[in-house]
Amino acid sequence: MSSRQEQKAQARAEREQRERQAAQAQRRRRLLAQLGSVLAVAAVIVVALVLVSQGSKDKPNASGGAAVVGAADARAMLDGVTQKGTSLGDPKAPMVLTEFADLQCPFCRDYALNVLPQVVQRYVRTKKLRLELRMRGFIGPDSVVAAQAAYAAAARDRMWNFIDVFYRNQGTENSGYVTPSFLSKIATASGVPAKPILAAKTSTGDARSVQDAEREATAAGLTSTPSFLLGTKGGEGKPLVISSLDAASFTAALDAALAAP
Amino acid sequence: MSERRLRVAALAVAALGLAVAVYLTYIHYAGLQPFCAGGGHGCERVQSSSYAKVGGVPVALLGLAGYLSIAIALLAPGERARLAAAALTVIGFGFSAYLTYLELFVIDAICQWCVASAVLLTVLAVLSVWRLLVAEPDVV
Image (cartoon, rainbow over all chains, first blue to last red; front, top):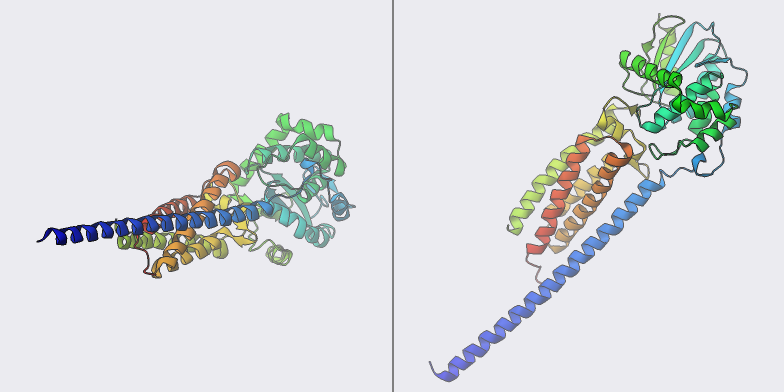
């Protein structure tokens, strides 16, 4: 091979190598750009999802300085109905419906706002049914504080107003919204002095009531809230099986259970 | 690992994720009514918490749609499909990380199915980004 040919071959090899290197560099740049755009798009979408998720949770509530709402609605539902301790309705009513609830539970709130008014109207005011409340505290520490406050309201025969106003101002679960300021506002709007409601947090009696409710729920095999036991006055309650927490399904289940021998 | 192997591995993981999402969506719609569960029922508690929906859409259904889209992107040929698969899995990874944070620090309950899905999405994100890096680009 002549030296001229060798020079040509070498030049070609060098050119090809330069081209390969240039192509590789271009490919690397393109990959990085692609990866960058993938990560940027992903970050934007994740942030959007988080914001949507958080947005639906940030309920305005009275712990953040917002006014308490719903005191008049609670009064409209309950005025003229006997309240004694944890019970609502005529003490001589033949049947008793016991509800197990957690004040932080969003579904207990749905029941209280959408179903309870009809239950009070159709069964409690007509003296067919007396309602009993058992406050549990399993969602978080705020549930226990709230439950004990509800029992303090029960000692003043205002538990049902208290829980109704509470649900109407319920915040995001375990967000720490059950502050003394929040409880004071709920108490005042429910017609209860704030002092005993705030003292409930350290009251052994109210703490025992919450523990008793837990024990009673466990004994009855109830693992969720809201759960219901239906029984005759003075008798033992049996779980009321409900398929859905809307007024029509609930009253249908209640009618069927009340009609059963 | 070759692009082909990475794709097959990602498809297998996506199939597992799809199975988990189908199960969780089924539970959400078929069985359990919305109640707050107590007594150590982590999954029920997570699924019935107010965080179980994003803008009214159950997270389980969102997961199902996500895994389906990932599987389709993995099955489709070409560079755009590879990019889509990487983007979708990274989104899934980011959102699962947020949901796991909620479980640990806000809802205070762990749903093992949700943790399984978070692990699968982490693996999927790694595989898809890796695949993007080793694949030969399309001839333009």
